[in-house]
Length: 266
Image 1 (cartoon, one colour):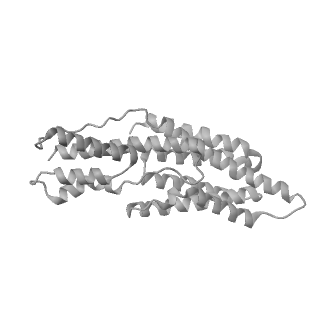
Image 2 (cartoon, helix red, strand yellow; image 1 turned 90 degrees about the vertical axis):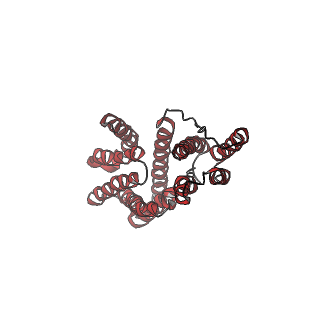
Image 3 (cartoon, helix red, strand yellow; image 1 turned 135 degrees about the vertical axis):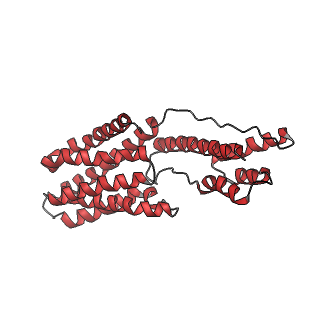
């Protein structure tokens, strides 16, 4: 993996988190730049992918939480400290869960972030005569964090990969080639366009040569069977959800190409 690419992604993270840092500089004070540098590490997760990316995000958010707890000065730093603590722990727990086939926490991360923010706010907020202003400030902080998250996702989805992936169907000799091609095209189309795994799994199982062991067929189909689309959470904007859908299409095309490479080896 090229150092230049890692540096580019890290600088993008500094830019994105730097926007939030500028907005909250008055509340964060001298630790603003340190927090931006630490939080930017989470952007590298787009390079390393899951599940290693979860560990990078855990490192970024947990270290930022420690810095905030050490430098507690008001309800905003306290709220952010709990918010980042919850987020970091969620990503840390997501690593072993992912190895067991679950990505529940990352797919519902906004709820975790919101829970951490609410708990932090409840602990550190002190009622005063200007309660409404404090509450408004808190809502603005949550909104800014959500906006930064959306912008980060947009950049990674929109510019993360500019390559176009095509599906290469292997020229296998299976008897009635025309019928085979029609079935293959239909199965691939259903999976790539709609995420429907069943036709592709049935097709590959049916056309697998008798000389191929069942275990080899299962191994080849395992990534297809275990595939789960990531379309964001319930609060993901429609325009960002469309980018998720396009990226998932490319991911499914890549899975099909990898499957056909294994079929060719049979």
